[in-house]
Length: 247
Ligand code: PGA
Image (tube, rainbow, N blue to C red; front, side, top):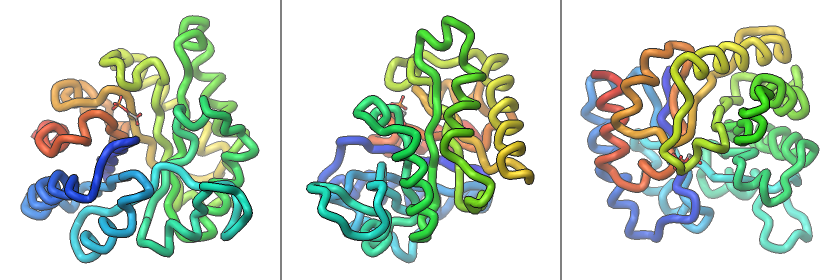
């Protein structure tokens, strides 16, 4: 199974559903549709209405984050996995670099993953090195640490997807070389096998993915799909990624 996950970040109002309608109609007719899943993570404000609308359709709706407590608490503006699930979310991102930069620690991320799984959300756990770590050749050790600090064998690996997103690549148009990316993805899968003592969960790539560079990424068979930011806000750009992936 391959995954094309669109992360809308701070984008979208109710009428933006027209973008997803176009993606959904492409997806419903695509002869390759059984090979992949499309998940969109709109902002919190749209999760309930979009989930209802796409309930019996192909697209699945997820959240971009969740709070690190189980159900209800007295944290102003916080939204838990339980609350997300109650309005139809099926997935949640955890550990996006935007949120790590805003103060998410490994301990917080561990609770987010734990409670998301407990509340029947699938977790897309994001990891990635920054520019300096890359320059200092620390990429593999940073990724290993990010995985080992948060994931545990007792977490159901069937509910976990990993998204490798080098921070220097997010929204910049810069992407890793095919050679580096292959090596990194294999490394991530090896670390995951070590944690779960079983086959690795799916590992996605994210960072400036578009309809052109997907041609390069698709040659790396170890990559199980993509987390797509900028290019998920336009139906054509998002559909082009899928089209070119299966071309
Ligand atoms: P980008 O964002 O595709 O715009 O680089 C990816 C992400 O942040 O998930």
